[in-house]
Image 1: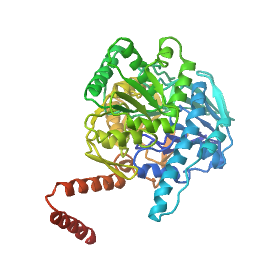
Image 2 (image 1 turned 90 degrees about the vertical axis):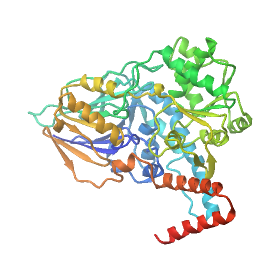
Image 3 (image 1 turned 180 degrees about the horizontal axis):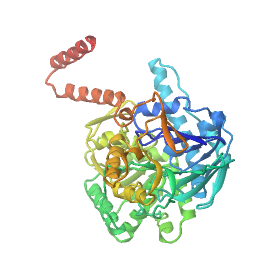
Image 4 (image 1 turned 135 degrees about the horizontal axis):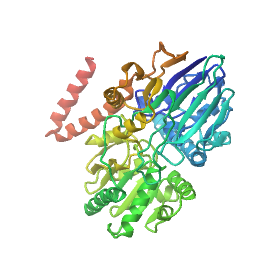
Length: 524
């Protein structure tokens, strides 16, 4: 029996999760996610798939986040006609998330093409459209937790609660033996492992007695303090009070699904206890509004009621969103995307970053090269929609809302899966994070030969209990996936040059500076 796995994403980076699983019985995908982060990384979304789409019989999906599901419409557009197996909450969320992703791509490309036309550059097309995404929804197939599901002949899957997001799962796959003396091959794909402490999620679970384990390492290099609900809310309350006291708006870039709902529940508790000053909360994300309805459907009790707090105002349309530019103080604006790379949040940043009285609160992981990471690192200026924006606002980070397990949690989860018979593959982490987690596993006494750090596009062949790696030429290296790219450097250079020109005393000095820069460029 031969089984092989190709790491088509989230290997050396944290986005684009996609495993191409080839068996003697047929081929399937585990996840089909979109790449996010730097422009160089995002350009991978436009390239052909790293596999023959016609050879794929089915997809099993760990959860609805776009970095795990966002290229499903591209897959269907390319000819995939098989089922996409996912839990019911995941299917409910995708009903809104995939069309929203298509709409955002259409909108971003339309804006880019207007700029390209003025610059004499060629027009571009979106990866897929809203219509393409809507066509994908009919191929969703609901599965239950803990129940074996036949995926293709000879391959079955069982979903376990990953505790990361409503409906999220770690997926156990069993490939039937093809020879009488062989035994089935059992693989477990962790998906994103939750903290067990988030507002809506249970503690992550998963089976044992595995041959191969694929585990995410997003926070493999760091730990967070254990925190009760009240302690987390106290930290949020402190940030909100200080932001509003400064006299401006509080802008919170937030993932539309889960993170926004968690924030709303905690804000509702703080308002109800009188721990926040008078303020209006604007949720400016159509997807977040629809996702909130899905969460309310699957939740009961006080959390469900909190989502409908009277302080919360859903922004109904683009025109209403534009009106928020007139609000100079006293507003809490929650908008997507969480890494600041697309959507309405970029307009709110343009309107507030230059104001010293404003605050931007980052509440999620910021991938390398994303605008959120650039702000987090203390940039004095950024470019948004081609415009230079000086950063005078307070940039704050509150990491207690992360949906990803930290190093200690990952270790406990992995330890509970041991012994793993053959190999542990560390994925879904930047190079520093998964290397750090590798060291933690080695300190646990796990044989170094059992721990692998696969690269993008690498294929491992699992034949008769042995693991062999096929030679590859990766589209991007781990270093390229985990750092800012030349687009980030270009934007920073333009901003730095502008600041320098403003700082010199007169026009003659400015001319001398520019002539020097041009001479340096010409000499390259």
